[in-house]
Length: 174
Image (tube, rainbow, N blue to C red; front, top):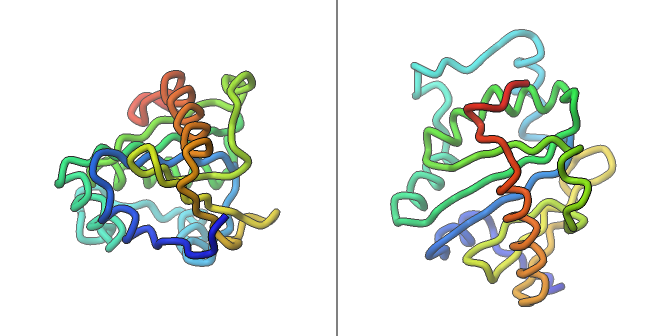
């Protein structure tokens, strides 16, 4: 795969119709989330009413993208019972929804017969794929990017199969 990997901002700013994201790990250990995850573990929760306390540049990008008419969907495949990390993600997902993203959750046991790529990914306009590659411990490794139509179709088919079975965020209880 080519080494020139567009940033998330570049991908989303170039999106014209759709941006879908599939997450398949039960634990992420991304440096930027370590401190917020630790605070959450100590009992801190985002205040849904105090938007200024949780709104951030990523949500600006999501809102701008959705505001241009791009449909953004995120699906998460999770093991049950869910990990503390997934509980943390779930508790903050209202921010993604507030920015205009559609989010669903699929219990891993319901995904056994779906052919899935080996890594999390973003698929933009059914043609461009950015794979988010992680280390075994959950930290970010080198991302990958391709516009290979076969890879885009694999990711599209996988995402749509997951989306069809997944539970809307508002209905999924952890």
